[in-house]
Length: 276
Ligand SMILES: NC(=O)c1ccc[n+]([C@@H]2O[C@H](COP(=O)([O-])OP(=O)(O)OC[C@H]3O[C@@H](n4cnc5c(N)ncnc54)[C@H](OP(=O)(O)O)[C@@H]3O)[C@@H](O)[C@H]2O)c1
Image (cartoon, rainbow, N blue to C red; front, side):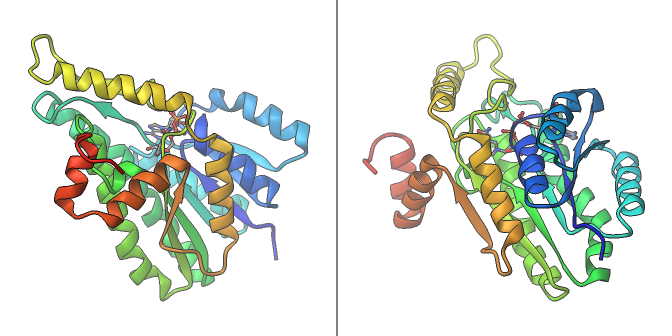
């Protein structure tokens, strides 16, 4: 029995980086994958200081070839085993549906949704062959709730949520566990680096500005990436993890309200017309 192996996408920063460390602390050989390996130097240094088995590898989730060669190398190095896959790579866009170009909808779907599909499809045969493994898809509160001026991102996360539900039926039969993690706003560079689409004279400029300002304010109060990483590591360690895991106070608040209210009531709540 070799050491357990984990692959984490989007590990150059934020939740993916923290999840790589958390899984290495849990005893995994953690492959922290990223588009640009030079961004992994600080992570490797931190892992070395703690004596953790973190390995940086290049993987761009947008590219079939990149996913193929990265996973092939991990399987070769780990004796054919991958016990955990964490799909954390992601990007964000802000702008009204009328203002966001179709190319950006494609880009969001390519990375946030198809990137996970691509990586899962490449790793699934190895998990099935060994009769087990855990796939964690990092979705978002935005995977369950449509806030204004976030549709390109929300669509990609809604798709990821659907994928997780389908996969549990399909892969559970082979001992593969699938968990969708839904963080609220988290203290990373994610929202700050969101691509913004608010053309001059847009009728949505005021609304998009309010959404962006609200997001910036919420990051200050957001959940630490280490807390999301701990939830991910907990899901990977569990024998029977739940289909979904909400992380953060804002996630509990919004998703709790979403469950309790009718669609019409919830719409008024998001618009600020109805108290929680
Ligand atoms: N922060 C939040 O408030 C929040 C809330 C809910 C859910 N999430 C989700 O959490 C996940 C991680 O986000 P984060 O908060 O940790 O933000 P982050 O620090 O910006 O991390 C995003 C990561 O995704 C990587 N990435 C982007 N495109 C990629 C691609 N094509 N291939 C491989 N990696 C790619 C980025 O790498 P580069 O360095 O190469 O750009 C970066 O490492 C995302 O899926 C996001 O939707 C975040």
